[in-house]
Length: 338
Image 1 (cartoon, rainbow, N blue to C red):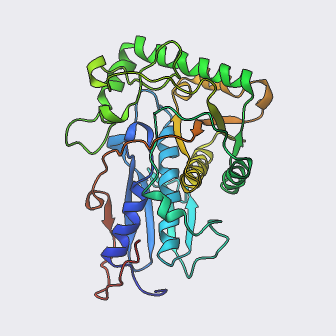
Image 2: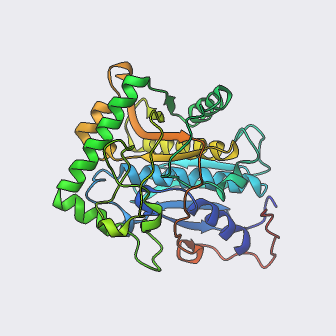
């Protein structure tokens, strides 16, 4: 394999894995360009699918692309390559967020676990109630090590801090519902039948209500959401993903760390939902760290637990995501996809 250009089968398998990553509002803000002879993927932000109102600085786009990079690296390692990732390699090329060169045989320590790839296809965000069963300490330790490996930290807030974070999430939901511009933006990200982006109504979960965990409602009409309500766990297990600094490269690292954690949770039979609401308002985001973590920058709030799987969301076909800059070799290599 080393020295050979990538054929279509391997290239599309890798891009399919990358594009299975979560993204804010299922916007899938990524595109890929492949130099097959050099075995280099260029990963771009996709301009048509950015989030202009709640994501003016493109932080959510960087987080989403970072998650896709984690999947890309896991797929490359699974297929027998060592992924060499460079973040923001060329500031003079607008939208180029990373390159990934496929080198020789993968190193065992590179991704910590060799089974991350199979979790890619099982991971789904779940907006359904979780059981109150605590996440095992050994799993939490593994998560903390994984996100630290990618340049982030995972904090477990105490009860009072959890209540405060849920309050900020609820306040963000109320603001989004009351603001006409945000309401229109949210409605735009409801998936249309047959569309490849946006969130379908069945995947949105429960609407905000007194006594329920505040979850994104997307300001949609009541009949666009699942009927019925269920009680959420009274004391959800929340975790705050942070970075020390708050630059575009830190957002990419946070996205890689987020997806690394989500894949590990999937392997352990755990579910997660991303609570990004308060992070979309600068003043609320600045309050999320709290007095305990003044020197860190919040990047994502996670709810973790045991519970039912979430619902699948639509994805773009790889043919719409991948562009080639060099012709592939006539020799085709079988794709070792489980």
